Amino acid sequence: MNELRPTSAPVRAFLDWPVVTDPSGWSANVALLGIQHSEPYAGDPRPNDQARAPDAIRLRSEEISGGPNQWDFDLGAPLAELAPRCIDIGNVAWAGGSYADYAASLSARVRHLWKRGTQVFAFGGDHGVTIPLLDALDGVGGRVHVFHIDAHLDWREDVGGVTRGYSSPLRWASTRREVSGMTQVGLRQTGSARRAEVEAARAYGSHLFPAHVLHEAGWQPVLATIPKGSAVYITIDADGLDPTEMPGVMAPSPGGILYRELAPVLRHIAQHHPVVGMDVVEVAPRNDSVNGITAIMAGRLVLNVLGASWAPGGAMRRRQPA
Ligand SMILES: [Mn+2]
Image (cartoon, rainbow, N blue to C red):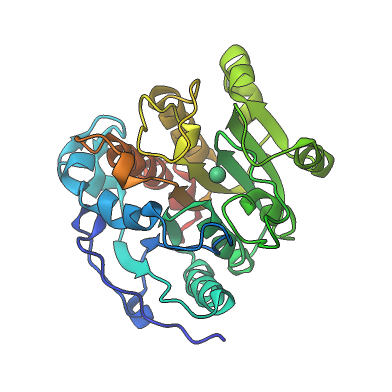
């Protein structure tokens, strides 16, 4: 199952980038895609609200960026001066049938992009969408460190026999030989993890930073866990941020990470490490505020990584042949 199927067109392109749904046209430095579904749990079989997030975020494009030639004060330049060729490659919807086939076709598309050195951004969907992305990491050509922002550990081996659902992406990452290690930040309250999952994550060597530890010790110990020069894959569950700033989630948990602390950290990582891919998942449009702040935050998190990756001195720009 390796043929590259076209994607479906979004309702609006992210930041009005060119829309290219046919894989034969996927030649770009940066590609953004929407992933609407993951493997459902038996008790939760229907498409969830997060399936609407990729288009809900795109529809906030002008609030995310007023235009490529406007000065972006987070990035210190207009985006057009930093960003190379960026395309929106549409959405990958699942119309029923085999989940395995859906996931494999998704991985094949992302592997195709990574083999060409494209930086991939994805909007979920719930956190299960990260799993077929991780399955494509063999296209990167080297190992990656996973940097994870979430209120929850996401280390379940399975829930009711389902191994690729939203409670399992970091456990899945630990089984990928392309993943050299992981850093998990923002953990708090309770989720699917029990003692067994915490012990499994520790035994693997995952660097766990509960939110209260982070807020006491700062970001330096967190950044120190990313091996120098290593490529990085970033996965951001919107509920890792504070719900006063990203209210549009299914599991709001007090005491989270703030934009003003995370944005500079993401820029730092993108300056020092090639960020080969990043997903922002678990945005639930029905819980978003009337002004769409959750969707805007999702877009801004991507822009901070994108801008810093391709700015002078950025790790993706440095990787390009001159
Ligand atoms: Mn999660």
